[in-house]
Structures are given as C-alpha cells and as structure tokens.
Image (cartoon, rainbow, N blue to C red; front, side, top):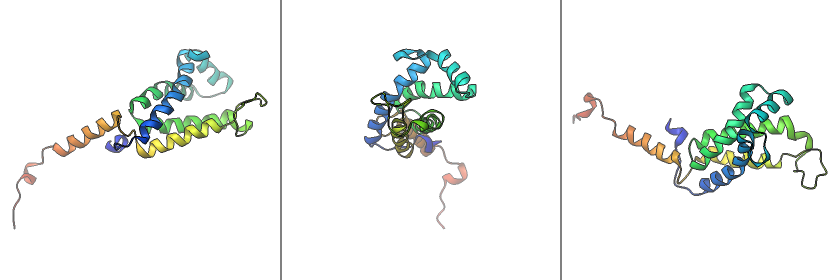
Length: 166
C-alpha cells in the first residue's frame, strides 16, 4: 500500500499536479456538472453510451475520473492512480475520437475535429506523475509517512524483543 502513496519532497510533481488538475477540472466539470458549456452528467452519459457506443461503466468512470480525479490530483491524493486513469482516458479519447483528425488541434477551424496533441501532453504529464508520485505538499506524502511510521513503530513479537548475545 505504501508504494501507491510513496513520494518525496520534490516540487516538480507539485507543478505537474496543479497544472494538470487545472486543465482537467473544466473538462470534468463540463461532463459532471454542465459547467463551461458542457452537457452535465446525464447529457454526457447519454452521448458516451448512445452516440459513441461506450459501455455505461466506462462512460461513468470517464466522467468521475476527469471531475473528481482532477480534484484529488490537486490535493495530491491517489496521485499515481489518478494519473494512470488519465492516461487510460486520454488513450481512449485518441482511439475513439481524435486519431482520424491527425496530430494538431483545430486551431484555425480547418479540420473536422480536434487532433491528439493535447492528449499526448496529458499522457506525458500523467506518466511523470505515475513515476514520481505527488511530491511535496501532497496528501499522498502524508499518508505514506503514516504507513511508514505505523510499520516502523509496530510492536515486535515477544520472541524478537530480547536479543541474545551468542
């Protein structure tokens, strides 16, 4: 369990976490709450399941992953898990929607859809967070210390408590 939360005092993961959460939150809020011009939970769920043909569970996990996951990421809670879920979500978005439109985003409205360059950036940032964890000022760091401290201070079995010099 400690491996999931383990991280160090580095500041690079903090910058990655906060920027990624800042970018992902509006996308999640569109899907869950209908903010920023989105369709909200029911509209997004309907689009994913009826228009795109995704299973209900996958659609639900994408909505929750982007919305609540971005908040968890900002707090540095379950950083590795959330970052890994973002990788899966972005790979899914590339394969199901963006690959046919090429690499570049639709900056000038000359494509029929958006390319996948944004998704690759999210994948890259997320991969770095999977490797490093949440870094300084993360709840993961607090939890990892708690797990480490609990294991360190756990009472030893009675037969190990006495040392014999032989």
